[in-house]
Length: 260
Image 1 (cartoon, helix red, strand yellow):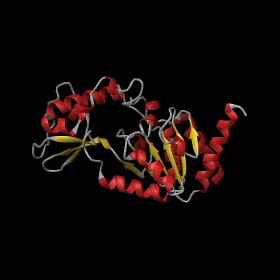
Image 2: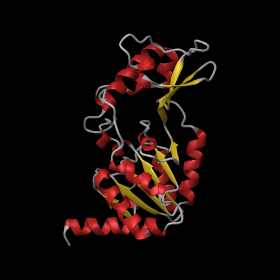
Image 3: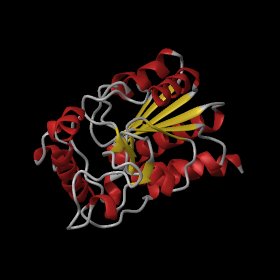
Image 4: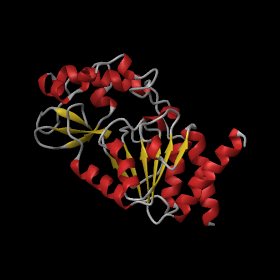
């Protein structure tokens, strides 16, 4: 059997599992957004080669909010290369599966907002979102725009227009707990699901990395689509070592064709 034939059979098997599932979820990581031009943190050219985790930790924010914001803005600029980014075919494929009633939840470790931009609605943000910032005094939430964080003459830290309190990006910083509600819902989905599709995630960062094991323990079909090996490969029913922007659209097409 050729590699192409093996790849085709794997995609067919994944599509069949999704079609027959009563409950299916996706788990995505940075690798689903790198084809859109979003730099990851841990890859070969990852941002951790240029920045230290402590630069954007909750401890740094509390000690030195101005310095934290200057580094956070610099990392944001490097991650997105100062250019607008758009969803890629992998994001769109997951949105198509949700719209077709196949995907019940999309759990993401990403903060870039590209799943929402692609049309997905059932998104659980485990690490928050970079699109919003919240005042630490009054709780007012604002959009994290260039007027707050990106202009050349910006003053750091940015403050609330209502009470002058310090704003904090709505992302989970190093040393900060994940939003308990989002993780609780993600675990419940992993316990109930028939299929867990992990795409573009190294599956090395807990507690998100525990979700495939939870799903497997409860009898689900576990699918991993990732270019590199992951710690969960040994328990997965299907491992597709392929680009997510190639594999996911083709799988979605097969699912939608089978449901017609």
